[in-house]
Length: 183
Image 1 (cartoon, one colour):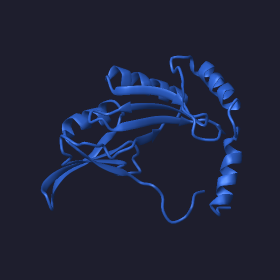
Image 2 (tube, rainbow, N blue to C red):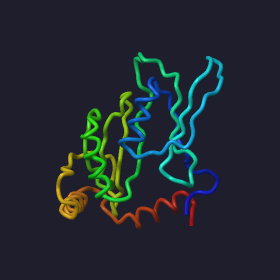
Image 3 (cartoon, rainbow, N blue to C red):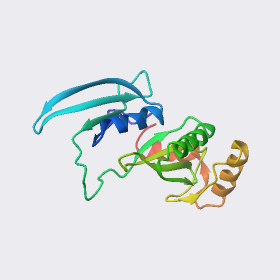
């Protein structure tokens, strides 16, 4: 159950080199191109690339041409993708290394384990797996994703239990549902 009315659907961003970005998101992160095309906008024509990893969602990510090659500041803080398992996250970590993604940093937040990296246009991406517990945030501690999956999970739990606010995810979720007025 979630708060009624709105739910997050997709993210769109301007890119400089659509072909390079397509290769990264399709080749490394396993997105599928669902559509592509061009539209006319106030600044002239631009191309759009629609990507998804879910057949129920036409697009989860939209890449649009028009980002200037030289920008003093990247306004995108991060784009986050949830992993279905710790083993998947470990595998994707290896794929990012093979793809020579920039600034690959695996960390634990206590309530999740994440891999941060940079895509070809220096946007920060986060791949993460939710852990079955909660700890007070923020937490960002290095973690070794080369450990065998069960050993890694044991380490992550021991680490989380040492942090303030440790509780089960179910207990945290119940508190948040009450706070949000969701019964």
